[in-house]
Length: 176
Image (cartoon, rainbow, N blue to C red; front, side, top):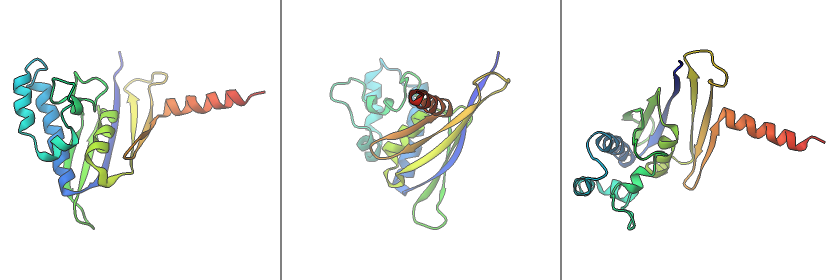
């Protein structure tokens, strides 16, 4: 048996309000994951109503959804597991007003973090980060990395395996 890990660490410049929203999003994800079950809608609505105005603006209630956190849960490919699996620390910016967020982890959900940055950190866009994935055993195709470039309308990038396959397919298509 082998274990595979996804690792990254990066800093992102944010406004004070965005830093507060990032912290709140990490707290909400932890609370939903451990304590608020999907069938407990009254509890979820009460908890949603306690969220900041910034959170409610970034993740408004979907009119066609009973779960008030549906927009927030859209950050994840699997909303049944709302975990960033990352650490967040906020520090003061050295050369400008605002703050710097350090996001790091060794089992990080890079897609969810990219989605969060797009929603919660518009002042930092466009922004990009890289990650590495590796296996604790030497196993074929279990080492690589990737990147995301995040804009206000798109998240571009992917794994090195996906990028390599795209290049190989384009080269194959050019063969006579």
